[in-house]
Every structure is written in C-alpha cells, then in structure tokens.
Length: 115
Ligand code: SF4
Image (tube, rainbow, N blue to C red; front, side, top):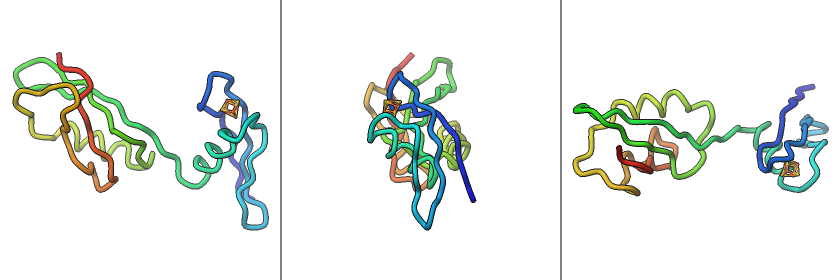
C-alpha cells in the first residue's frame, strides 16, 4: 500500500499528515482542518508548487520572477531552464509576463521585481 508522510504547509501550525490509498480512495489523517486534507490529497496525487527564481539580465542586473500559479512539481527543473533561456525583455516592469504558458503548464511567469 502506498503511503506518504508529509507536513502541511498551508499554515504555520504544520500538521504532520499521513496519506494513503484505501479501497481506491485517498485518505488523509493528522490534519486539523479541511485545508490539510485538500493539501494532502494533492501532494499524494500530483504535488504542485509555485516556482520563484531570479532571471539574470545579459548586461547585469536581475529580475525576480515567479509563476502566477502552482505548477506540477515534476516540471520544476524544466520550468527553471525555460526561464533561464527566455529572451530578455526590454524595459521590464513589475507585473510584466516573461513567459506565457511556461512548458505547457498553463502558468505564466511574471516579473515581481526589477533590479
Ligand atoms: S491541516 Fe490545517 S491547521 Fe494543520 S497545518 Fe494544514 S492548514 Fe494548518
């Protein structure tokens, strides 16, 4: 039987979750609230993460960027490579989109800080 132990990151309490499949259903225990059950099920089926990183501009300086929604954790390194090789935007501003639908995830990479 597949079982996963993890910590819920939806709030600072950090409940220790146990997630397992029983009779075709994903069952979460250890959560103090429904958000933990939702988080645990997602972690068990398909972990998702918002990706935050830094884009290095060719002439110096950086752009802080992040995906505008969570993407499959398994695509983490693929998304990072796409960001690193993205064409450098001219006159970048806070909120601009660096990459649309990055790696087919449906998420856009947006600029959150220009340095
Ligand atoms: S299960 Fe609920 S109370 Fe526990 S860490 Fe997650 S969000 Fe917080």
